[in-house]
Length: 130
Image (cartoon, rainbow, N blue to C red):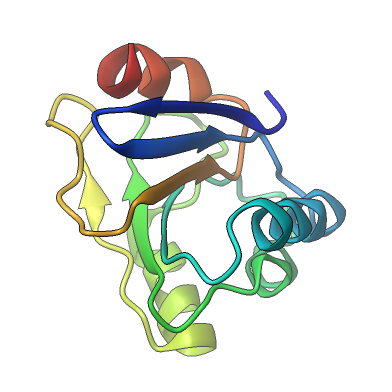
């Protein structure tokens, strides 16, 4: 659940269950060390009881990064509208919805980071990576 990296079809997938500001800062440091200046597609699923604003700030997304929201039914999950409001407010970037039954998100970013909660890592790994 922490910094689980794999490459498939030229896409580097990083699955990291970071869900608090401290772990988001660690994730950012790892990305800067291993993939400096690479554009990232962030695939997020977050819980309402987390410090989402500070978590997103600690990720320190780059100017060419993109956000996606992974929809999953969970009683504590934030909505796509809430997360998009945060990414627009903080970074000027939308956070469109990804449906769990859809194919891999179309983006030209070579690095895909799945984070925000442990709850969705297995589902994404089984659906899009394995």
